[in-house]
Length: 336
Image: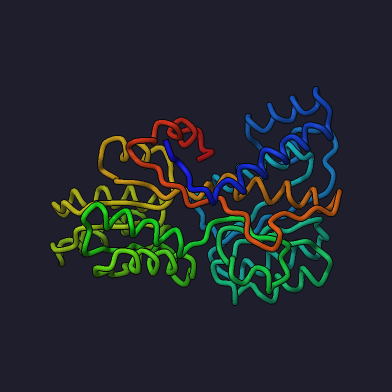
């Protein structure tokens, strides 16, 4: 079973090594207690009596987007394991993101984790944090700008490469006319996914804009697009919630188009099992929350850096009907 590409070895190896480092530094009993606390969930720092330092996570995630709930959980669990406080704020508005970053700087946090869907919109705030001596790690979006803005590394997947992988699989499935559904306006990473899919597909690709904060309306928009052009024989959504809406939209439109998506949850894994979704591109959002907290703790305590100037890749992996059982239980508990 090949669940992930070779590019994921970097992140997997890093996680294994860092887990061992954490256990060694705390001692056997403390490490076991920390691991149990992390598995139970909750806020960062809850797994030890006296958390050391604060790491702020500022994402572009909108309220109600379950993808970012998984990122948040990963960060909080890492906070428990590493005995640091973790705060989390999310907003799709780059101005609000910048304000949250500025507030973190004013509070003199020990590290900052930022996703940059709109890099230009948060550039000034991120660079100001770096200038103030706060180590920054970028996650999920903004890989190309990460180093230029002064971040010590980026954790995520290369979005265009992930899109190309999706396009290749859709092409192999016989898709020639693709609807690529973008759920956040102005998100450069999502546009890169669609561009990569279009490049690999080689057929016709049309982008469709919806709002992840209004999934019922997203369903209606996808239904209308399918009804307006019955020749569309493939749909690629870029978010697990939108994927569920697309399943309903295909049924409402009476379309036989093949559906694929980015990202997982229990609804997506069930739809894959039922044959309603071909595959999901998995970028492992839990790791995008967990790893940066561990990396920043090691940077603070031991001046360690990870990646050697290259991003730490958490994806893309592809979950299909052949391997979905291996991850379904973790999607159901909210860590995949």
